Amino acid sequence: MVLFNQASFSKLKTCIILLCILLVDCQILESASQSLPLVPNILTFIDQRLALVFPIIQNFKKTITSDPLGVTTTWVGPNICNYTGFYCDNPPDNLTATTIASIDFNGFQLSAPSLDGFIDRLPDLALFHANTNSFSGTISPKIAGLKYLYELDLSNNLLSGVFPISILNIPTLSFLDIRYNFFTGTVPPQIFMQALDALFLNNNNFMLTLPNNLGNTLAAYLTLANNKFTGPIPSSIGKASSTLREVLLLNNHLTGCLPYEIGFLKNTILFDSGNNLLTGPLPYSFGCLEKVEQLNLARNMLYGEVPELVCALGNLVNLSLSFNYFTRVGPLCKKLIKNGVIDVRQNCIFGLPDQRSVKECRAFFLIPRSCSHPALFKVVPCKIPPLWKPHVKTQSHRHLLSYSALSRNRVL
Ligand SMILES: *[C@@H]1O[C@H](CO)[C@@H](O)[C@H](O)[C@H]1NC(C)=O
Ligand SMILES: *[C@@H]1O[C@H](CO)[C@@H](O)[C@H](O)[C@H]1NC(C)=O
Ligand SMILES: *[C@@H]1O[C@H](CO)[C@@H](O)[C@H](O)[C@H]1NC(C)=O
Image (cartoon, rainbow, N blue to C red; front, top):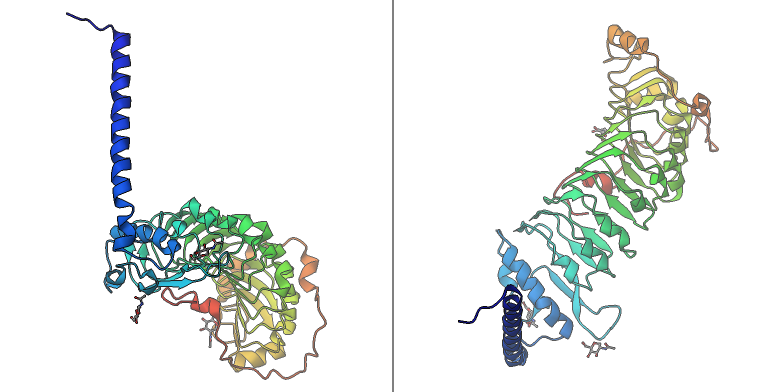
């Protein structure tokens, strides 16, 4: 009887395992060498790049759990450029090649547990639009490898996790829309260093303070509304004066006083920080928002006078100051209250209709309140037009992109 000692037995085991691996390898090699030439015979792709993404799309298709519009029924065969939602173009690195350059799934209502292993593996993707689907999971860090990506719209899905920081490594990205998802945690300051034109983050669960460098953004559209942001509006916001056109901060938990630097935003047509916990006076500098049409500061704890300079803004269509604690308005403001441009309901301006009760106002002013740098509140950092210039504008038919961003199904 031959007895193996423990050591030689384990050597034998290793040998057997190695032999098995070799055999399996040979089998794989053999079957690969058989099937490889078969693939082009069955499916003929107009470009090698399409052949490479074909299995990626088919694998993604297998993960789709709901497709009420039946779009994936078109995702068959080698003519990927004809699949519903997929668009081909010549990639920048080879203008004779054909590749998947953009995907538009807007409104498709597809459900899938993840986009991982799909968009991050379509190397030439420049646009991905997927408003109103039910994609879940988090965004793969591998998305950073998409060197041509410049529009990413994941709005109105079920995505969660922290801000997809891998996006910060895509230098070409200019449009980022992740509104109406379940992202949480903080917004990384690096996002405001990226050359984005538009950043839509509204209706998520983002929290904590807004990064101090917010004003470094080059974005024209910035929507941070309907999150759980706390702390003050960063005074750096004034740095965005040449680019920022629309900014939505409404429905958060922002505190502190309105930074005087907001008045530098001479190209801003929409500023909305309604329904927060902002306090202090309305800075005179707001009288420098020469292009502003919609200015919403309603439902905060602002107090003091409404500067006549602000009521003199020539493009004002709607200034909402309701549900604050303002105490005084001048003749110019009164005129605009009468014609409906300014709303001061539920303040402490006695003599005007629909104000808070004396008791409520007294209780508010019993608590001492102050802002740092109080002298700045009366500084006017621009040349102001004569106050007697008649206010002509009372309505605007301008399409405000940021307000559209507050509708979940709207494609921007
Ligand atoms: C794509 O579809 C169109 C019409 O739906 C058809 O005319 C065209 O031949 C198709 N192209 C390919 C490559 O299958
Ligand atoms: C460009 O793409 C075409 C079509 O796929 C291919 O035949 C050609 O080899 C590519 N050129 C380079 C330089 O990769
Ligand atoms: C003015 O703005 C407020 C706050 O955004 C809004 O509730 C109101 O509907 C607007 N009024 C008009 C006439 O657009």
